Image (cartoon, rainbow, N blue to C red; front, side, top):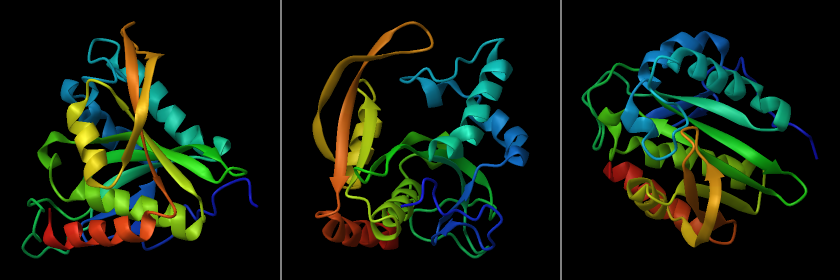
Length: 219
């Protein structure tokens, strides 16, 4: 079993491509494109990953440096871009230029021996919240985890106060397993409980079909 994902970071077309989004491994040249997009308090309301204050640039650089180092830990950070073809938006899309950056996501906490990983650190610009993009992004990531890596389990962890994200995970088929109490201390010093969801390989065919239907319908 390889110790790192079989990524080709120079691959063309993009690494993971769907009808509405494509995901590319994060690169240094993405840093300054993403910096202003991430400077929005709504994105970090529950995680406090970034605090929007006069230290934002320093915080963001540390955040992005960590994303670029993930391959050393067998993970990968992805930049999420729109994949529209320039025609009228499909159901669930909004008018955006093809290739517009709309967010980021990660594979991390990868356990090759146990065949499991976590998908998280996902955020999107507020303009696309509730649209089809997240569902297709998760469809692409889950397909890769279950069908290419042949993993048995994919996990999602969500701040207990973030009801919107919990509902989003449930919509893509995540099963709620429980709550890790006082699991983390956020950057502002507050504690958070963490809700754990998972999808396992036995469930994947049914959940994949449902996700594909939702993406086609733009739900």
